Image 1 (cartoon, rainbow, N blue to C red):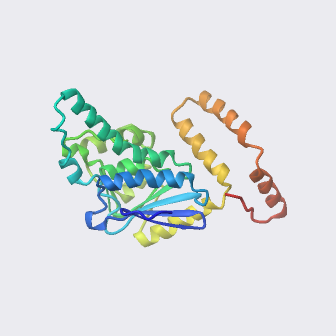
Image 2: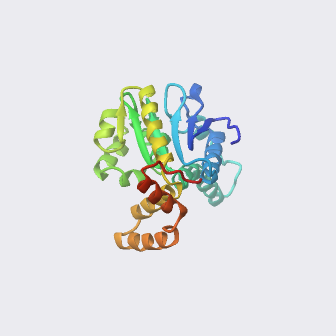
Image 3: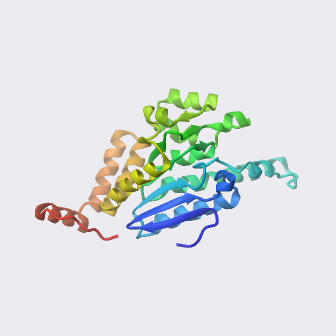
Length: 270
């Protein structure tokens, strides 16, 4: 793995631990961080040695969202044509959407481990993760409403697939903080922990458990879950037939059967 300016990346036993690493900026993301995040998750998508990813934040907060200097510096005044200025703005928004979509498209499960602030684009990011875990002091805020913006990086598209629509609307309209215990109660997180250290121990244990499973099956499960989320039951079943017709008869299937019969731990190739 290459070295990243805005992220720490450690890989061990099939688990990639990725951490936002701008603690002096509360892990707010400037343009270089957005560009790196897209590259990073596209790289992890292809990395055979990585089976599962844990996403956390260095310093006091998980992620404070978009670095405000990025928004304040948004200026297309040099483009004279109004239509072309709007085109540039559209391209800018897509540039910020793509790194988050890269998390969702990554073939490996991504577990978000959230402590303290998860603000604005931070919520967009965790909404694209497969699972979310939090500390008691963690808080989730759809902050865009207080900034004169409609959240445009995925929260309003993905969060309704995770939470009751009424709760999504409340968060989006009020911009209020949803803290750890409430986040678990409404289904935003799988579990809540006393502090960051305890959370990281728990989340890493879950990640290691996933990493021990067949990577082919885990990748397929993520594919099917995402497809089923966005399609009818009938379409999902048809896709499932096609997927298993292609992938079912694998070495991993035989390894699982043999391990079960011999009561040993299966070992799967990457």
